[in-house]
Length: 234
Ligand code: ATP
Image 1 (tube, rainbow, N blue to C red):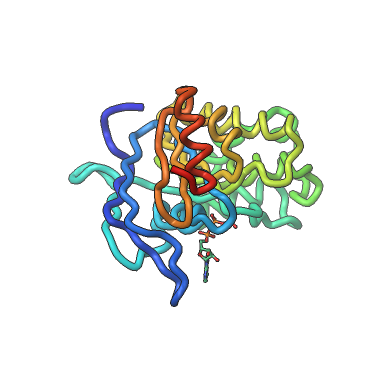
Image 2 (image 1 turned 90 degrees about the horizontal axis):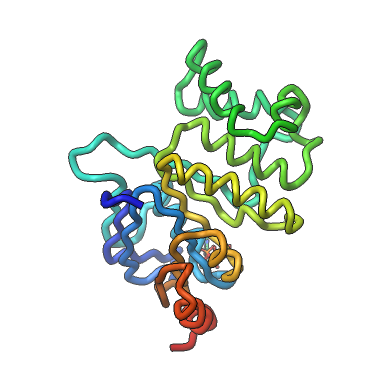
């Protein structure tokens, strides 16, 4: 993680009608960080992810994505449940994502080739088969690849491990971590604290819409603090 801040949230609160989802979130995310946002069902992870992505405007507070004066930062969200086009081929799923950010023609082909290089060999060999034929883990990897078509600086993943066999979870997470080594900022929304602690640099624990703890994932003292915070303790 470098010095520069990719995302800064100040006093961010959100409510859906009368339902409060987030309270006074103050959070800086450094460029190139792999940050895990953990919390139980309803803790506010998805809401925070959409606000960081910029697709949801918070009820109050400030969101800054990128450094003032620097080039605008692009962010991309891999939603929970993946939302792939199952009847389209892998290549078509990637193409649609390219069109969505205005890339066409030879630029689209180049971008598709670059994105395909990130895919595991077994998926690269199956670019023309329908997405419906992929396993759950493979679909998750395709969903990440689709988000990569936007060439994001910040990538937000909403529970990418949901419903996957443990071996596939490891593969998906290893591939996500590889992106951070290349300078991308990764925000992983994750229900399991143990998984966030093993696969992220830093962990933020949300409890009932508030940041209940934040620390270095490799610090054994933090693991205890985080566990207490997760369940609403001090
Ligand atoms: P999950 O793991 O179940 O996805 P989460 O930690 O991602 O949970 P959010 O989805 O952000 O939590 O939800 C936070 C709170 O906001 C919950 O009380 C939820 O019921 C509520 N909420 C979320 N989306 C909406 C919505 N569109 N309309 C009304 N309430 C909502």
